[in-house]
Image 1: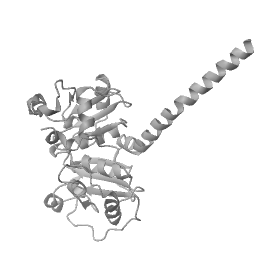
Image 2 (image 1 turned 30 degrees about the vertical axis):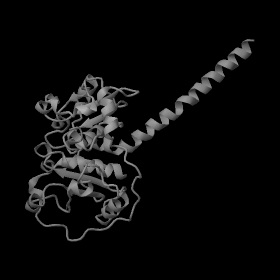
Image 3 (image 1 turned 180 degrees about the vertical axis):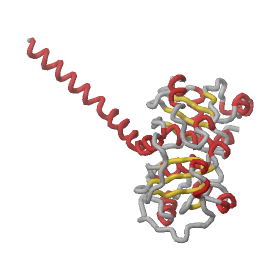
Image 4 (image 1 turned 135 degrees about the horizontal axis):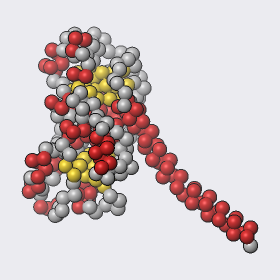
Length: 288
């Protein structure tokens, strides 16, 4: 009888172990997708031979001075102008990026005006990550010495081989998902972070009554707090999030005004290891 009992116990342990493996594999796969961003965020930025630099400032500011060999793009080129979601023609976008020498086997550094801007670098970085480019970093132009800047545009851009974009977006939520999270009607706890200013956050009367949001389950953290003065993701902010009981395995939905600063914060969260961070691209304009 003892033998049978021990065999049964072993069988139960084996089966229970088998049941937990898919979750662990899924989570490790999710973290693998952000590993290069997480590791890169912890290190100083270095522009090497395999690095493509994108400057998302206005063409005028780019013409005054920029990092050598950088190219000038805007985040709007890769967005749906009506609802601020990513463009649906993902293969066309990937082909255009390849013609600019941007591909998954390259490191991409995106520069903007940091806290003086509106989160443009983070928005484009999240776009590239969602398409399948995993080694993406952001910074303010001031991260690099001004004495090394140039006015001359790159004479020739070497193409990359065409590559296949990821099929579906993993970092956007729709309005129904956001509404459920705001009402607290989700199976598991989902944190909603409102990254507008404190004054805008306190003005909750601008929610359309038809959505039936009586209680507002959102935490207000202005988006600039997620960045250092050099426009890098703020590593120290992870302790603040943990103090709010927000952990890397938690689901997070980021809400901003129009899907710009919220995308930047989502990118920062991914760079800090919060692999379940997503954002609502329509922003508050989709709730009025």
